[in-house]
Length: 222
Length: 66
Image 1: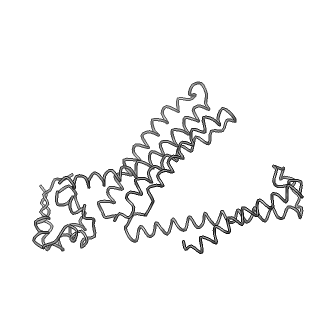
Image 2 (image 1 turned 90 degrees about the horizontal axis):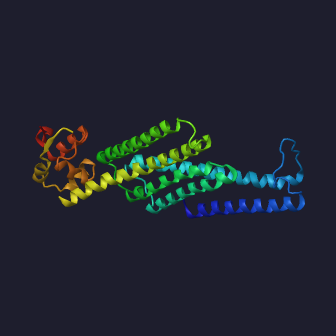
Image 3 (image 1 turned 90 degrees about the vertical axis):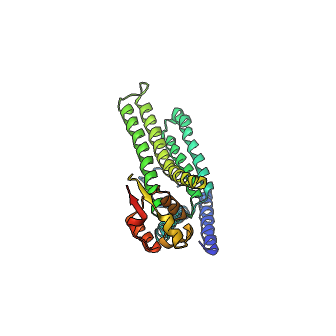
């Protein structure tokens, strides 16, 4: 993305955040906090003073939606570029540090006893981002037929391991209540599924690097 | 995998080509040529044909399946 275009997008983002903040302040000060505090929307009647809040929130939603659309278009363009040039996509290995977000899954052990929320356990999925570390190391590699074979082998092995873990987990969890509670079974299912998927994401990249790297090491010795 | 003997190195040297040059001509990485020469990689038919054209030898002369 060009610098000027980037600046425009950042400016739009700042404008959206500011407009929401100002309209929230307006609603709290002059409109009895309507649309700021939770309210029953079933008998909602439009007031002219609601307009700033509605406009600013709509603008922000539109902005976020266009950001996602741009991200989607960018990813598609990159995929097409990879197919055309036969060169792996360029990724900074430091993106692998995003895998640390997987530790957010442990938040579930804190939220579940407090308010019964189990969704944070799904954050264990982010452990899969550690795979970016290896994908980044192979950035810009020319994909010849042997490399593509290695990709297929790595993916196959990763999916086999993932599938086996899920299969064993299914057999164990189907037994019913874990430690006498069905909720514990649900928690265990979320954790195992998240970790298995994360492992699948990570392993496909790690194994590919391992195959390619090992072969190169062999050649170095020869 | 079927075992085979690869005589690519001999034919490549006869044409005075480096691994890098051959790899570039047939559109693969140098590591793939190395693997081929050590008979550790079984190439696709297309790659085998491309190589045979570049080194001007038949596929049977380059790859000897046992």
